[in-house]
Image 1: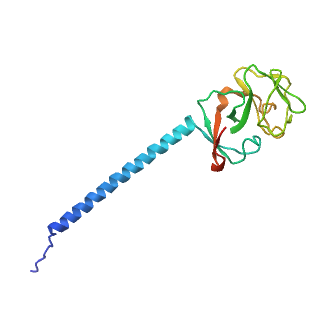
Image 2: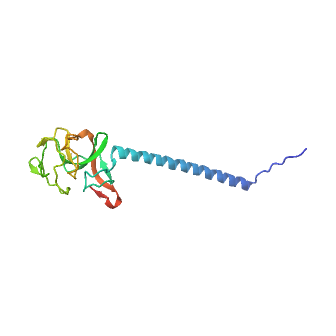
Length: 192
């Protein structure tokens, strides 16, 4: 009969294997912790970006020269909307960006040369490069209804906004928030 001989590991080999197993266990624990932390951080970022600070990309030219195509902006849902603010709002399953010209109860008039009057006074608009009446099929002067805001794009000749019955005044519940910072491209980073 042949004898089978089993090799018995030495104490040194056992200690090395035990160290290796402990290192593997520490690595797996660290990996689980890191992945868990990344998932929590991503969830918090998603919650913040959807609930408090939505991130938006500019598409189109209706807000030039203030905003350019493909710029990335941050919006605040916590800010109160005021005249002169740029807001994001829902319109026909799209998000539009326009400037608030008037609030509930205000009276807006736009002359043929594009001068905007708010409550009988000409509006100082340093943010536009040229005045234009644009597409305007509402009856002027126009009083802004309750719980609505009157918005216009900064590029008045091409912007479709509250001057058109297609868009009209924006209901306050459709306002996503006030645009407050341009984050991309980095060279254009600025508060708005």
